[in-house]
Image 1: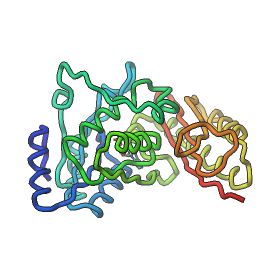
Image 2: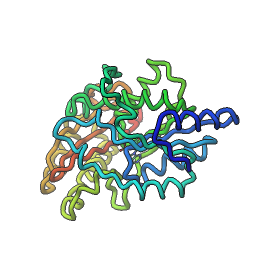
Image 3: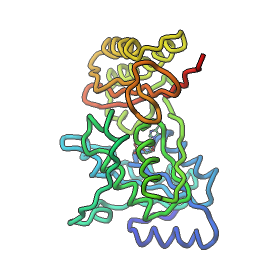
Length: 284
Ligand code: AMP
């Protein structure tokens, strides 16, 4: 596996692969890799000839007081995992390689990025869009892989790629969960034993929501109340948001119909966790 810390080195290696006629798959990450990340890598390996992964804890997507400093950075372990998966190139830049001292150009998606995590974390998606746009320009992949764990991010990136004419296919991959249902996340490492148990409230609330919908409930308010009760019955769990939205437009729906997103963000102890479920409501 080539490890490139500079943009020039990355471009040279990617261009060499392109000259050989290889298709380029790209998996952007912030590291602290788990099976969720690796599921994207495996799909990229299956679909494309030359797989690039990036590890960059992007300062621009963290707000003041968020966990930028303490975000886990187990580089040695990540490197070993990526080698094992047969990744061809790891782009591992320092912050100075990505952001010049007088960096002053940002990419803003103005619609899908506003509700949900965009409302709780102002500026977060500007940071995400900016770094992803830069990474797309550096790597120029044929296909880039994103997880549905960050459903809103996936929709925002798809919109940005379309609006700004990036010639990259965005491939969405399903949420990978721990055996007990907790969605895998690098931030799960922050949880102590009790918090880890209580963190199950996100998955439990989503499964109960699904049960209610399967039983015929269509009022979003009713499902949200049910989910709130479940989350709040867990110790040290505080609700950031629980929302039901149209899965494409990310606008709230009162009556569930068509493809809906049920999304929640919960702070367990001091750790903010997100999870979601997309349900297709059968038309009767
Ligand atoms: P991150 O390192 O958290 O920025 O995530 C990098 C990519 O991995 C994003 O596209 C995430 O959506 C995806 N990802 C993170 N956790 C999971 C998971 N549990 N299942 C599927 N994809 C995930």
